[in-house]
Amino acid sequence: MTKFSDLKLHAKVLKAVDEAGYESPTPIQAGAIPPALEGRDVLGIAQTGTGKTAGFVLPMISMLARGRARARMPRSLVLCPTRELAAQVAENFDTYAKHVKLSKALLIGGVSFKEQDTLIDKGVDVLIATPGRLLDHFERGKLILSDVKVMVVDEADRMLDMGFIPDIERIFGLTPFTRQTLFFSATMAPEIERITNTFLHTPERIEVARQATASETIEQGVVMFRGSRRDRADSEKRKLLRLLIDAEGDALTNAIVFCNRKMDVDIVAKSLKKYGYDAAPIHGDLDQSQRTRTLDGFRNGELKLLIASDVAARGLDVPSVSHVINFDVPGHAEDYVHRIGRTGRAGREGKAITLCNPRDEKNLEDVQRLIQKEIPRLDSPLKGAAAPAKTDRPETAEEAPKPARRTRRKPEDKPAAKPAEAAQEAKQPESKPAPENKPSRGGRGRGGRKQEGGGNKVVGMGDHMPGFIALSFDERRTD
Image (cartoon, rainbow, N blue to C red; front, side):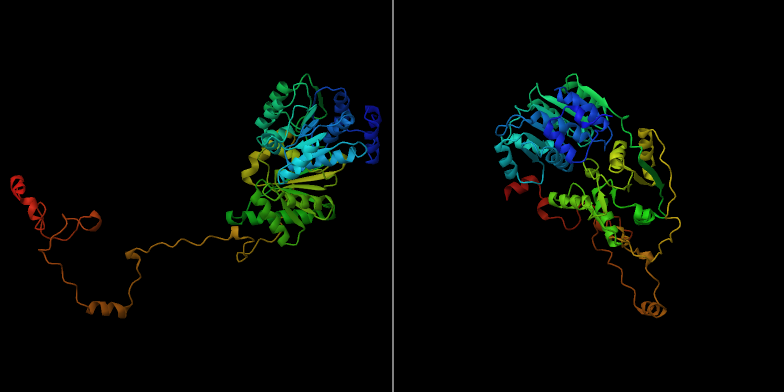
């Protein structure tokens, strides 16, 4: 069995790895580290949770142990799709480089440009960044990428999903042609294949698992759900979620609940907290400081339920997540693999439960086609629960039924008069008809409608024609 000591890593890196409690590398680490130390390009394909981050962090630290960076000219660059993943990579560098004097900078959104500029001006050996913030610094003239010797692209397939591929291609063009490239992805879409063929030079390909597969240590299941009525479906689905959480009992030590939409993340988190569950939301619209506090609380065990959008499907490394619950079936089948990959990490057992309503059945078929496996059906605990009474109030304002639109009552819909009122109306004299010699408007009433009444027929312009119009042209000139 391969050990870290057999991989020719720097002695100080091996010391940090030993202090972290690791003895043997994972398959992706054992396959990627040797060619990376030789200076070759690496294309790593592995499912999430297999240790890809250490697969490039450890050789980078060993290669950068000697040398010094110049101001605004980083020696290495790591590109990540999300802030959370970038922060995780930075934590890995802190863990494994604590005995090596390497400087690093983290360039992500939600943090002051001034603080990041200060770090860059001092010179950094390792620059970890999201593509957008990196290009912001470059366009402001605060960053020079001509001295990058090692470039890492992490979670490349997620970059594709988030629309970062044009930015990635531009960044490749800003770095030297002689750079070493380490490229990691869980899946290999055609666009990713094109980029690797364009920018990687005879890379060492390491594929430790079939593309887009889930770990065998994860128990998967799906609950088919259909609401009793359209206006109650959302409320009943949240009730089903609560029943599933309760049914797991003590086995559920913590869980990540994934929703497709940010709005649903907030609604589900608010609903769970209303019923006494320890839950908090995280998605891209939240302030970075709030996202960091929420993630730290979940990692530390202070928070039990993390309600998340796909922003947390990548880069959230919490080894002991017991459950992943898909409140919605993801629209992209690949996201299912990344979501459930948050549990069952490092050989641990995990459980993934998916809620599927009729409109998500096609997405579920796509997921099963991708993983080449039929997900077992689970019994719904909602069947045995009492149906909500019709008088129950909705949980949120969004579910409250809209008031009926007020319609104008037609004359014929007017209620019949009471007998006393009818008698009084009979005593009132009828209104006199209009005189017949009153001029009409061409046989038409208000709004251009023809009048049904008689009236004199008007020829020409009628009696109200101004006198000067009747004068001949010659008569007008003499006035």
